[in-house]
Amino acid sequence: MAIKCLLSTIMGAKRLKMTEVADGAGLARSTVFGLYHDKVKKVDYAVLDKLCSFLNCQPGDLLVYVPEEKDSHKD
Picture 1 (cartoon, rainbow, N blue to C red):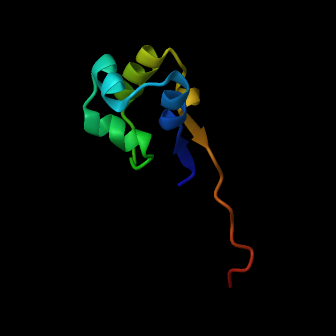
Picture 2: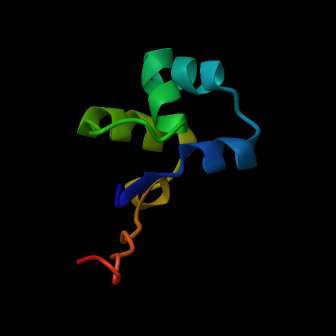
């Protein structure tokens, strides 16, 4: 996927556990788990708002665009 979630990196830098983020941001633990492991297909603006508020960061700190490599050897 071309969009990567950096929640795990931010949480590691701040030494936060998933439960602390879920409780502090007012989110379900399953939501934080999915974002932490970069397994979600979409992110609601309300979730971004809560995470950014709790982590004191910008949406661009949480989500980055990583272009997928094109296979130049493809037929």
